[in-house]
Length: 420
Image (spheres, one colour):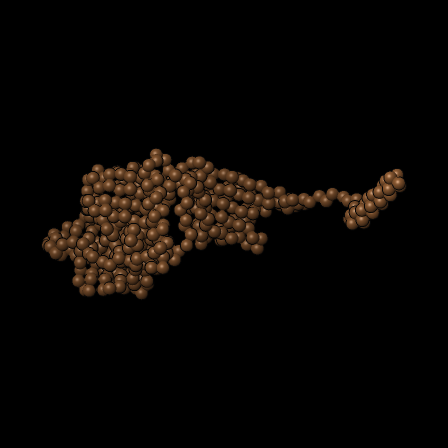
């Protein structure tokens, strides 16, 4: 009986195995012998080079074996973005070419030129035409805390390198509505700057934005925090009040004040006493002069002893005057609206002037006032809907400052969101 039962089990298992194999065999996709398909890819070549002294784009293309037929189209495409006639020696460039399979012709794909340390020109062949655009250079951002004490002037305190001089100028511009960095600096004044460090391939390339700053002038503390509103960045104090005033006391980068506001000054040319109802800022000929505030140009041209002059009307009864200009910027004429900081002309010595300077005057409700002592309203504060976000950002900056204060190195691994 046991033998019969064992035989039945063996037959059953054998049949089941055969049945499963049959089903499995029926479900398997048929296999067909195939042949490998060879796909020819285009040949891409990248040429990296440095602009030699006196070299033009024509010279570069000729030296690198790039067809000169592209030059007119490239020059035309880039004209409104960057003038390729202004190639600077020692700046880098990258040329990419592409050769399609079966073709002997190399087509220009892209041309990149390093304009400066912050951006490069990129020209792309779109087959129909060339597209030119400026592209920001991508850097690794680290954060550094720079502190100092005033002994002589701000540039001396920060250092004489090009990057430190730039920082000094930017710091002065941040607090220019609060502190006159020419007449009000005191020995022993202190400052602290939280600034981005820009690194590329582990090499320091320069400083980026000043994110926060503190300046103690004659015992009074001023602070600034960078914050973006509607796509534009401004500086505010920790309470959200703007550091920017409606009018600037000095609408240019000047060397020194050669003559102040006075109701009785001996004129250097006429040799007689007369009022000087403005401030003379001495600066080299050609130094850019900016609009002191947002407004409308009401006069642009020659105005007797005042030489080439621009007059701007601002809200709240203010007018600003810019005299002795070497030239007025193209497009600045009566009726044109300008924004604070927009260039309107250049320092000169036209009219009755002994040397290059800007004669800057401010009129309030028809009466001239001293630009260095005027009290003008601040720009708008942080809108209420952004205050919570602004305070959170200020807290992040303050935490970062505290962290860096206890460290000898810049910190790279800190999250400071710039979204909004």
